[in-house]
Length: 113
Image (cartoon, rainbow, N blue to C red; front, top):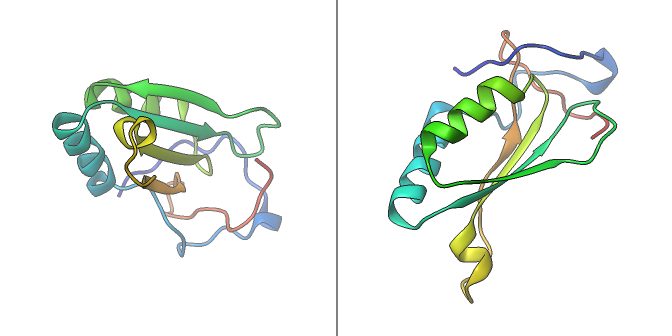
């Protein structure tokens, strides 16, 4: 299980082990997409961050991992799209949409983003 440092925690947000979490399998799938299709676009929402999301384009899975473990915290929401799908006439498809778990495997069901 992947876990991230806890920057903020509010019990009001209903943290639970139930909920879509970023996993190693998700990262592998994103890496496979980078290898087979090309760059991916990441939208990184900061849990209780009171700020706009960060957008990053990755052409290398190692760079994406380094960014996540340096910048993401428990509760942050991550969306990833195949850039090719966004720029071509193919249907839009999100590769991943979920939240970063804390050390207990919990993610907030609510929260301000």
